[in-house]
Image 1 (cartoon, rainbow, N blue to C red):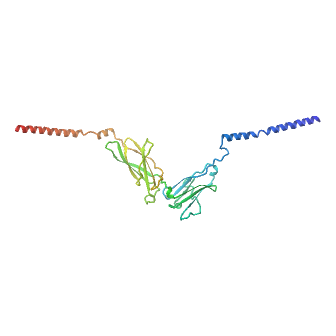
Image 2 (image 1 turned 90 degrees about the vertical axis):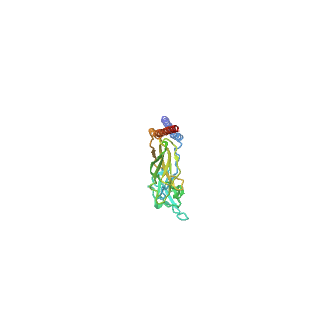
Image 3 (image 1 turned 180 degrees about the horizontal axis):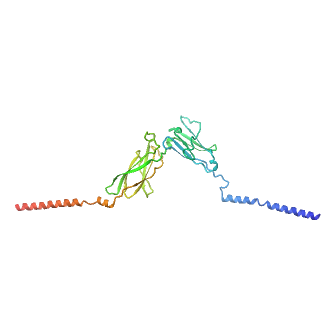
Amino acid sequence: MDLWRLLLTLAVAGSSSAFSGSEVTPAIPGRASQSLQRVNPGLGTNSSEKPKFTKCRSPELETFSCHWTDGVHHGLKSPGSIQLFYIRRSTQEWTQEWKECPDYVSAGENSCYFNSSYTSIWIPYCIRLTSNGGTVDQKCFSVEEIVQPDPPIGLNWTLLNISLTGIHADIQVRWEPPPNADVQKGWIVLEYELQYKEVNESQWKMMDPVLSTSVPVYSLRLDKEYEVRVRSRQRNSEKYGEFSEVLYVTLPQMSSFACEEEFQFPWFLIIIFGIFGLTMILFLFIFSKQQRKES
């Protein structure tokens, strides 16, 4: 009987030791997790960034669009989580009803497009960006303040003249207004800025803004190739639109033979006048001799 009690005591003691050893192992994943967080401090933290407006732009004073960032947190990218609402003041008081963006598609991703039916000039707008029901950004403006025209099109150039030295030339650069800008009826008045540079240069030379769609460029070197570009803005505005496509200007080269001919001294005329002069001197000499003999 004492032997059975001894065996039972040893069995209970062994099972208790095994259970105690198993309690140590859960602490290891905890230490590994802490080490991982020290290596990557961003783990377990919220690195979200709120959406915000990037720009609002009207290309022709008849429509406009607004764009925004969508934030880096994945929860903000769920369908319908980001919405744009707007109000406009048609009288002295702001209308209190906020309306949702009429078109989330036409201007591209993360944008709202307002066609001519929703666009009014000289009337202030306020827009509000919301995410999951909460306001994350807001701004106010008038449409005429956000005009940035599309690029001019159809750039071309013609040669005006070449200098007598054969080193420089003058050209005339022409272009067409942006296709969607109603400049013919005077709905919008644009002024243009022309810039040009040699192909291998980095600094553009700017000319004074003009209201016409052509401008002369003077004193370009014949042995150089030039790049020309044009942009436009609404008159009395400070915001230019995007530049046009670059126009490359390659001027005709004057050959050395042509230059020599241009600067060739008129030897033929010198010889003619020389012979004529000698003939006159000889005639006068003979005439004076004849007079002396008669006297």
